[in-house]
Image (cartoon, rainbow, N blue to C red; front, side, top):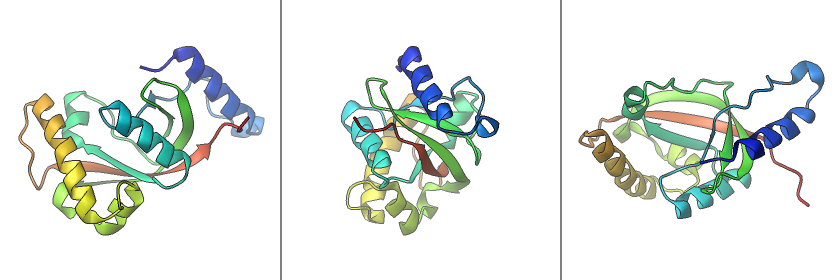
Length: 160
């Protein structure tokens, strides 16, 4: 869970880097971390900060179960570590919905994980989606729909 005061301060610092006419609303966007455990959340957040991870995916079934809107190009998010400390701000550049078995090598590479191969992506993500499906009462399947999102980092805090 993120610290609302830290998230707001981070968002305000980002907004201050933009000319007044280009500033987004004062209310910060969603703040979240990747994955479902501390080691992966912290590692993936670092990959995003370093510009290695430029894509991610989620189960469409999760969005449906939580009655949550699917991301759209232009959306911004504050990426945090597992402890909820803001790391960077990303902007969604592309969203496609495709079955798990139609994710290609380019997308797997852009996710930036492991050796960046499609084989690694399939193994790691099958394990992850199996856990998520269990939580949703669903059975993982080769054709389960994924929300495949590409993004770019729009803000990194200055290094001390």
